[in-house]
Length: 251
Image (cartoon, rainbow, N blue to C red; front, side, top):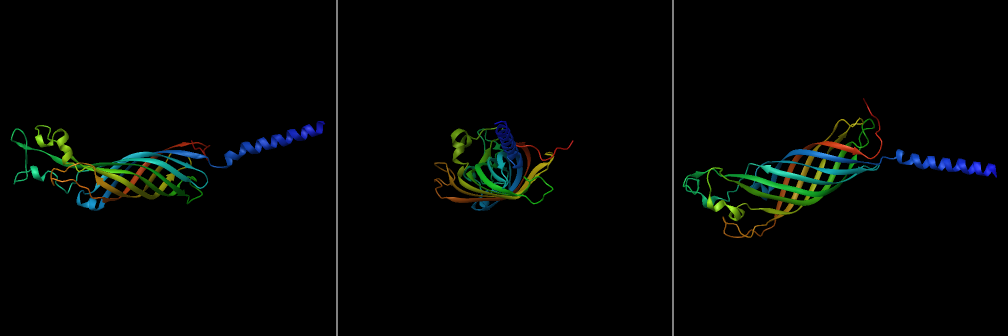
């Protein structure tokens, strides 16, 4: 009886030890909080409206398993000062000026503004045994909402009646719609967790449509669906939160 109990205790202890070691032998996961910045060029129909722009934002990714799968959320803000269209052409004098309520020339500027918000999924391909297994070439595919508009920047000293309140919406050409995103780059994650960044190429294809009921310049409503394409580079800093133990810690 004593021998059988001893054998059961040894077997139970071996099973518990094996179960306890299993999670440590497999990478669990890491939560990646990222802060990014980049530059973009418009392509196609969007190129007729805007010039180059910058993009800033961030997101949260979850990377897990030996295969380094990644899912995440992206939020990015688009901004630029190159507007090729002039929605205010009907308000300008022959000399190209816009006159304020005090009959003086108003300083009105046009800017590009927009955002992208979406979900993504991808994979990191490890390239070196010396680096962290979570580092390597990264491919992401995503989908979300892309929006862009012309921001009409008012003169702080004088008012233009046609550009106050709800009237301004008749000139900003607000457009948005479903967009697809692709990111191809490199994700650097050091084993001591002190140097973590990403850099790569990014592409957007947005199926956008005007969301304003009326455009004052053309005296009509834009109903056509446009393909809004953006091509750019994006770099960022990553702040990781690990769910498993560090591979190695340096002091």
